[in-house]
Image (spheres, rainbow, N blue to C red):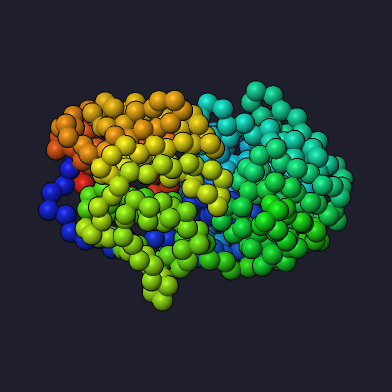
Length: 427
């Protein structure tokens, strides 16, 4: 898919209505496979490509999905002894790995193809998942095409993750939630999406406790989980993307559906340091970003595991920093390789570079931005190059743009407020 993007003049203030968070929803969909009865999710961003990829997976293994009007009801497959799922399904989303934790105790043998997902790093190892399953008592084998997991016996164990991985923390939580074992996981991720899945499982009858200060999760297995109705949390990355667009284009943008600022505390702190004006309205569940009133100054940002600045916002804020008068620097300790978009933006003549393991944004765009073609290497990098192109008076082409549709609901409709954007019919 290709997009055509260029600058839109005479912009007006914007209201954006958000549905639930992609990164929470996808994990919740797999978590619902643990419940005995059907589970219903509200606030579902049903237009996302990743959502449809997961729904296809659930139906391919025998589950049932009823999706309509921002709701999704999931019924897990019943009495299945063996499941084999090819990479034709699993490579469409990295969260397909969650099948391992959700189904290993429900079927005798589970064999799945390798996961897909964003390609901003050539090294996104998932051995941290597999080592965790082995520590919890599962037999795991794999070749260059498939992963096979077999549950052998519940074991009460303590396991330490070598890195606070969001996916591994959730996957091992799913595996340990049912059964007779008591499992203690150390060095877990504390991202809101992890807490959201734990909250959902506890609501369904699980016994999961999290010590935030120590990064410890205690899971006491239960016999079964019940079907429930659960509302998906708002999307913190989408929220802050529209914040970045507000300051990039000097607009006032209000995002509806934001019921807490806790999840975005660190990005909001960065905005405050930059001189950006914003206001959170708890009573009406919204946050407004005042681009018209803000004069940005340079900032140094370090992306780290939650509760620090999120790696997913690294490319987004990098583009926004071009509006600051001076040099901003960004370091990503989570995925240092997440820099391919920098070379794409340089084709545009965007004032950005990568030096000494830091992304440097020079700020104060003075040269005309070129008409060029840029590639979307992953979801957030794709949004970054779209944002850069939205400052150009000339039409730019964004290739591999299907990546962006994986994580931004109503993408064209919402971005039209900030730029001229359309799908290229001539592709």
